[in-house]
Image (tube, rainbow, N blue to C red; front, side):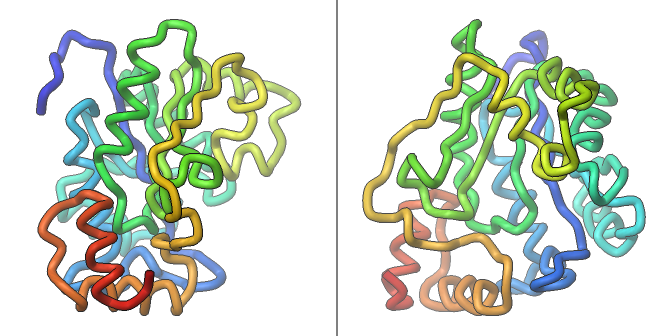
Amino acid sequence: MDVFLDEPKVLCVIQARLGSSRLPRKTLADLHGSPVIEHVVHRTRAMRLCHQVVAGVPHADVDLIDVLHSLDVDVVTGSEENVLERYVSAALQFNAAYVVRVTGDCPFFDPRAGDDVIGHITSHSRCGYVSNDTEMSGWPDGTDVECTRRYLLEDALAHPQCDSKDKEHVMPFVRRQVLTHMMMRTYDGLSDLKLSIDTQDDLDRARSIWNARPLDSYSIDDTIRSVCAAGLL
């Protein structure tokens, strides 16, 4: 890992749960011989500029917690609805200055996207929030990554105008408050490609991508080659 331990700590928190209404237990669904969440863990751990990866999981999701522990991932538990609180708890417990958000249904996450986002926010002192917003950047859905400063998450959680939707989706309140909000344009023509897993169709698509050809790396370019081999692009 190419970081120095005396730098302000960058913590990635994987937001994960079992209670998805459209595809229950999707984070534990089998994908190429491993649960979906395991792919996410390996890919987030490959970020060069992130010091530590942990997971934020609802109290009741014991099966998911057991799998994460088997992968040697620290888990912070909390309310299923108040995900923001889980992020703040994780940031405080692990003394993070910067907090990266990745979701547990993105098994094609590219560590390079995370490093790009982290590199930008840590090198710009006035920058409070950075993302590769997939609606604007050209990165496909399922490679989403956001990073903010811990104190902004703490301020959001304590603010009386931070509502239930803000707490469920973690970053909206921060995005409305900060002056610097960077969206990086990297790719063209991939915005319609869905790589996150929300439904059974999404899971079937992910399996088709894996079955078309082995993924040799974590890069989006390698994923796109598999997508093309599967005839999906």
